[in-house]
Length: 629
Image (cartoon, rainbow, N blue to C red; front, side, top):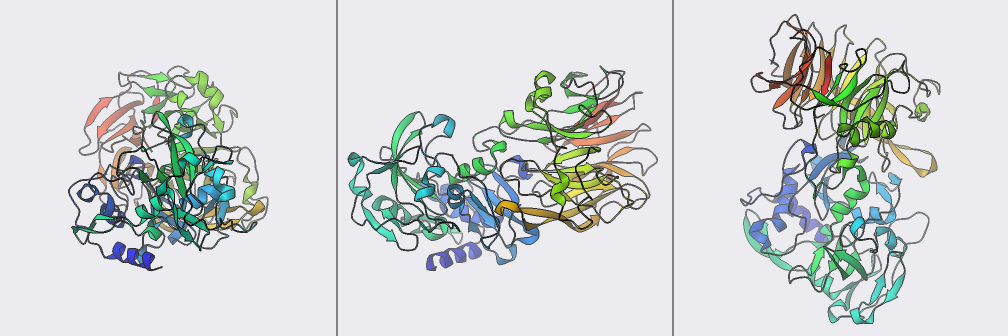
């Protein structure tokens, strides 16, 4: 505990006097670059800034690359701020406490149990991780053991078996190997002097070799109190936790070479020893942050190794059909490439973005299977580039979700039965796990929240709007960090823009599963005109909302701050201008206008409303553009 308490004091007291070298920018899904919280930056700077590294290995990584509000029952609204690094994840469970913690990611990957709150029962059993504990990703490292292979030889909380412990092996050298099947072997040639066991944890029952113990207690340059000083590089209990396995030798492909690597799993980190690495890099923190991210968000790809996702401009048009909407990808030369061939209406509404181009999808509503009803689908990324021949085969219908899972809500078991109704405006959450959708399952458009990721489908299907039977809801949107949602409704007789905080509480399901029920809190009406404000879209950085309004006598494009302040009109034309959508950099808006006699797609600058381009130019109707969220 002394280690832990000392590090917490450092976290709270360090001022933010940072060296000039900056880390890599965070991924754009967060709507910002850099660190999600200044306390994260303080901790990273202490060990990994260029002012102190001097060629030594990373303790966190070059910089943050993803932050979000993840489920945690004991955090405000059931959401905690997390940020991922190559080597780990930082998190803030209770902002008022001022304490940063370092998640038990290794425990979760080995056990397959995602902890969702302080008490043990607030957890979700999934499956252990097959990501290799050392070396390249699985596709380039097929024979190396993953976290699953350590499950039977690791110590972690388990209600159904006693805690695993290894016997004390002080002064013995490590020669035991483990393979892809979890089988143990012996390699006497690997029993090097530096692998001699020098510590045994009586807490978890595992042995620590000299080479790792030296690394855990290494001293060197650190950045503290606004200056470079010398001291313990990390408090190992805070950074790593206790060992949960003994050390084992594995064969792992590192780069283009298969090597012998000594690995040991701790609660929060993995340590690796590669004897033929250069000095200073022989012992390293494993890439636990990368490994956990691949396990929890497999649909998002690898943001630390891939270019930022590209969001092309998509729009709906009847140019080839004359009567119903199909989707087109803008070519910015007066037209676009047709990407759906359904013989029924399809309109795009949001992206399920991914750093893996093959996992990037369009969320659409379409009449492709039910001509009378709009239904929600995900279209494979091929549909956004190579034509509908692949799209028709890879369209996943989401509206088939069984609403009988909503049995626990007051109002009776038949309130939300599975039935075919209109469901539309599907807005994917920034982390790709949840979907806001407008549904008519209760005979009027209501706002609902569904889960769509197969990995950790933690959200129970939830009806968010219940108390306004006269209201109609439309065009939901997320803030970039997932902490706020926005929508449009006509509860006061005209359409206005609202925002609220989704609040999640755990709920026990059958088979010992835990999910989160979503409710709305802190509902705010952001626009209050005796006119209609519609088509609200949140900017990539979450700071502004673009929308269309008829408050000045006809439909024009406006922007305002996300709290409803500083409203600005961007267009001034007697025609109808509507359906704005943000460019990826947040500097422009695409929108639809019939100013040339039929609807076309245009682009304007947000700074001054200047029209920079007419994207389409034909005699058809081009509507409902989608660029980013």
